[in-house]
Amino acid sequence: MICYSLAFCQNHSDSLENALQNKLSDSVRFVTYIKLSAQKKYTDFVNAKRYADKAFSIADSKQWPWAKGLVYGQLAFLSNTQWRLLNRHEV
Image (cartoon, rainbow, N blue to C red; front, top):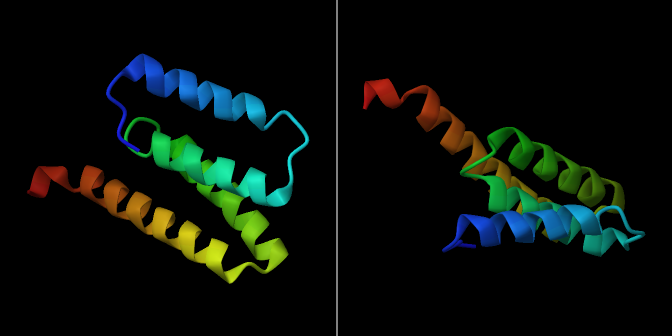
């Protein structure tokens, strides 16, 4: 998701985070964690990783291979981003 307004992105993230306070099915909770991780991947690496880890926990406990694939993709992106940030002085 590309956000054209920082305020819109923050409001959308806040809405998703607030939704997590409700009783949600595992599939909806999983999707919410993935969306939050994707939204925060450029601005809040720590929480992006935390949300991806929570999504993985659900995928693993439910034995959803398709969901694990989504999380692995997100974690790979985050790992690559972290590596680039740590090594940007070498570029």
